[in-house]
Length: 44
Image (cartoon, rainbow, N blue to C red; front, side):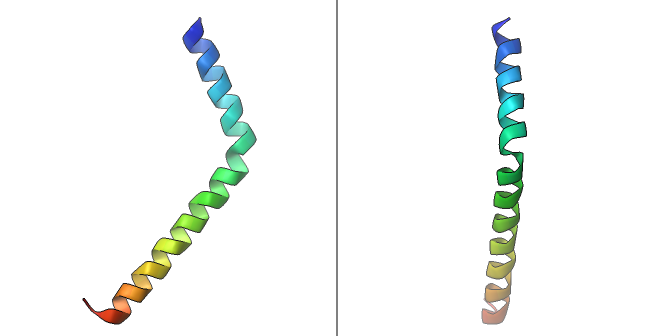
């Protein structure tokens, strides 16, 4: 009973914040790509 309610709340949270999570993930991916380019330039 409690678990079902928790899953429902989590699902609603995901639906509500999905666009923000996607933007955050894309931003992190861009940052990682940028760091990769920077480190490639230094040839460590």
